[in-house]
Length: 267
Image (cartoon, rainbow, N blue to C red; front, top):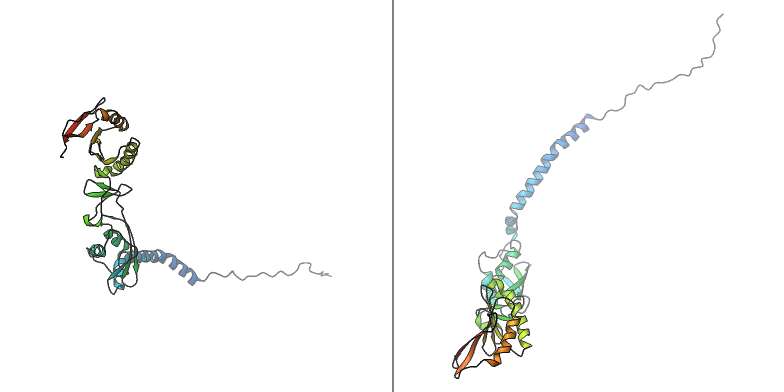
């Protein structure tokens, strides 16, 4: 007789369900997005190029009227309203508030010789706010122009400035700062010797000459001038001036001694 025992093994259930797959539609959309992304970037770049190249035209289209007036925000010594109006009327003509380039206005005003710097601001809808900084003359340059304290060469209308009492300097324009600096040093040197300086010049070869307040010219040549001025101070009392004559110049370009010249008293 067969004997049946209890089954010691438990029943095991197997899950035969498959893992969910990603939807095919989402995958296709992602692939499409990746493929058109460079195209989108290219279109954006092209749009930026178009906007940039036509920016001025876009600004001009926003303007209804050109700039019609200006306000000068500071008091000027040499510049008149007529100067400003004439300068602003030059080509290219002024545009409107949106289309006008501020730098263009500044460049126009800086063509005025005695203007050192300009500050310009646009005021809606059709005005400019202008501030002008002018050069201040500290010396006469080559008898026809002026120097600023920084050695800048500029011009001024004759009738707008009284140049009486200014030192007179001569030289190449590119050496204006050197000549102005030399004036300060030589003037201080002469003052210590109880002499006064009237004018100073430097030629194209770098040779110096000065004129004292008594109209005596000292020809110093090139190089250091201090020992030459010392020599003049030593020999000046010993110069014998002929009757009816006056001392015109002392040439100190020699290594030792000097040459002198005279002119009639009437000159």
